[in-house]
Amino acid sequence: MKSYLSLGSNMGNTKKNIDSALQKLQQDSKINITKKSSYYKTEPVGYKNQEWFLNIVIEIETTYTPYELLKKCNEIEKDLKRKRIIRWGPRTIDIDILLYENFTSNDKKLTVPHPRMTERGFVMIPLFEIVPEIKINNKPIKTYMKKFDEDVIKIKD
Image 1 (cartoon, rainbow, N blue to C red):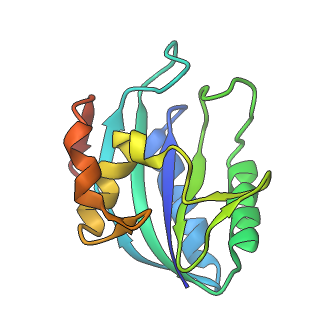
Image 2 (cartoon, one colour):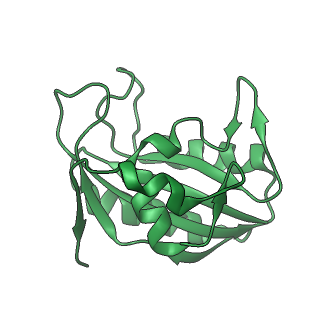
């Protein structure tokens, strides 16, 4: 099944953290990364007293169920020393499931589509870069794109 993940980091070597997470995802036989956005430098949301984030969005093909994929993402976060101390606080790595093909959920463990994705330029801009034709909540992604004037800076590889 096709899924879209957002990866972000604002602690330590942020690009290395994201690249390490990508490597761990790609090494899993049940995951194939099929598209990857550019890297984007973005201002933190919520808790502002922290470094800016580096973010990307990827498209994957996976044989994991959504809940198995969530478990895998959480394992990678733990492997890369993610600590959950402050909500929206600093982190070595954050991996969120944005969308999962033919699946929606709104329970305590997993909400898909991601509940705040359409409000966040650091998710929508890189997602639009790799799949400009995708629909979110049955609307074309471009209908959400007009509102993003926040500081989202594309980084060249």
